[in-house]
Image 1 (tube, rainbow, N blue to C red):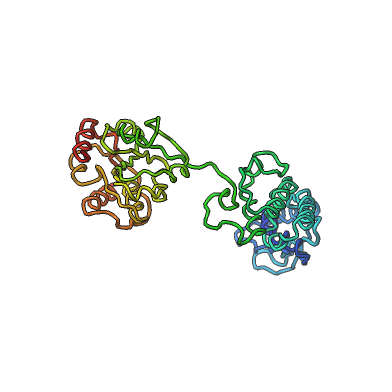
Image 2 (cartoon, rainbow, N blue to C red; image 1 turned 90 degrees about the vertical axis):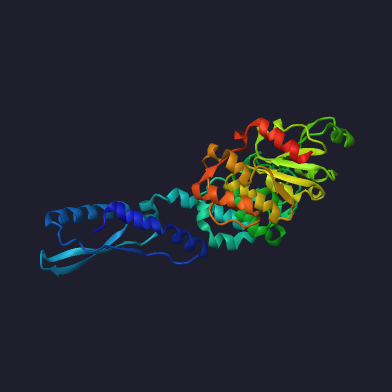
Length: 379
């Protein structure tokens, strides 16, 4: 036995089908919702109350109940509800509270077909996406028409001469990505991760921070500053060659590394380390990577090697773990196995920290030990 609320819920589940029928011009009504049989344990008085409530709902919500006379052992001959049928759109939409929404939906479908008929296939496939954005379609279609005419803008989003407010594209990236994919096809950059990259917009570049550990090297390259942060493309185009590069994941370690001849420190925090394999001049340098002794640290080390960089690790071996492993604390473990771009010593420690879910942070190593070891290693 279905209650009024249950009938509305079942009717609402058919809403997406209704929208598809609406845009395709197909028949949707009558929509029949079947009743289940009353439970054998139900009391007859309660059933009569439920039947009366159902007849009241029928008058108010615009569906028609079909009754069937059956003979039961418990209650004898009685009329039971078989189906609740919505015979037209008005009754159906009133019952699920969608009259106003469908009015807007119709207007927006007509607008899309008028302004961007190339989206017809998308409209037929995803009508529910139109219904959930009732007020934005005029501006959304302005964006679509602009990209149709300018598939490679090479501008920042706020520079686009579209006539929408400056944050409109950022706030509506999900729907715009689907629409622009449908409109532009092979003209999008399918390899790009970001919205800006996919649709050939300019985007804020990640920065790479580096610090000269040798004033003679800094002077030879004409840098007035020892600590420099620059966009990736500018760091990419530098011409450093034959120097040592220490990549460290911890900012305080980066700031406190001692002066080392012919050396440069690169801060690898955040996503910076992931960019390093794309810097060509690093292939002509001696590169050291120092990450935390934890699962993510070894994954980054392995990733850099997998991408073709010749990298030696610092403080990520069995000797370091043997000396300072007692300072480790609980850490994170990423799902999935690790490609084995690790030497035997690194692999042994990685297996230990992964199995025990531990991490040894770089900052926990004594500064005196770091200074002595690094200077001796790189002297």
